Each structure stands twice: as C-alpha cells, then as structure tokens.
Length: 208
Image (tube, rainbow, N blue to C red; front, side, top):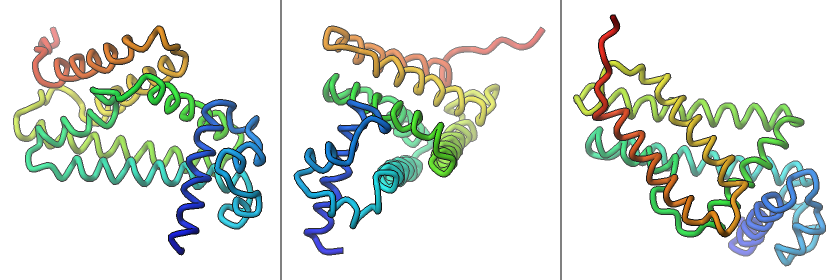
C-alpha cells in the first residue's frame, strides 16, 4: 500500500470512529464518514468494500493494537512491572482528557451494539476478549509465582473480574458530561487502588 493510500485509510478509520461514537454504527452513514474524512465514497469502497467492512477493519485495528500492547506489557523485566503495565491498559491512570475517555467509551458501546446484529463481528470481539483475559491471567499468575500477588486468588477468575470492572467503568464514562470530568480521573485512580489492594495487600481470611 502506498503512503498516500495508507493515509486515506487512516483518515477513514479515524473519521468512522468519531462518527460511530457520536451517532452509533447503524445511524452513521457513508456520506457522513467520507465527509468527515475529506474523501469520496469511492475511496471508502476501494479500501473496505462497504460500511460493514469499515466496521470490521476498525475492530481489527483496535484488537491488534490492544493485544500488541498487552504483549509488550508481559515482556516487562519483572512480573510486578508486567502486571502494573497490564492494569494500566485496562484503565488509564492518567487520562489525557475527559472528552477522549467519553468518546472512546461511546465507541466501545457502539461497536458492542453492532456486534449484537453481526455474528462475525461478535466472534472477533469474543476472540479478542479471550486473548486479553489470557494475557492478564498470565501476568497475575507470574506475579503469584514471584510472591507479588496472593496465591489465594484464582488467576483466571481474577483477570475476568478486573476486566468486567473496567468494562463497567466504560459504560459510566460513556454517560458522563463535562461537569463529570473530575470524576473520571478519580475513578481511574480508585480502580488502581482497589486492584492493587486486592492483588497485593488485602489479607484473605482462611475459610472456616
């Protein structure tokens, strides 16, 4: 792919993400997307075939990037650093802006809504979710082996619960307005405190 074509593809993916976050996948039109991208419909059809192809490409880009970042986190020199890096992928401890957090959250919900009507898209999301859970499970298990995390926690179940908690925060972020901006930073901080306490410091009593 030429640099020119790659730039056009990126423009379309960026514009589509913004349109989907604002209007939802079903409501966003090809005309809206190409106008936002500054290209013609022909360019969209050339790269993606149709709007569905664009949606699938957007999810593939997201999944590939997220899994690569997860793999990079696992490659940290210590198990403690690897787990710390992976938790930062779940919830950014220092969000750059409330609008970015909100828009990313709204895009996630829009894609999930689209997946409810697209089996192939749902399957891709499930594969990505499974792979990310397995990465986090590995990070927790490695930290347990090195004595950084209590072994009384099941690594797989703990990974799934942490991801579920992060997913819940995504839903809340999608509903936030500008006046809620300070809350986003607070929630991100409290998530990290809660995860750190649960994994590292909170004593778990013996079963009676």
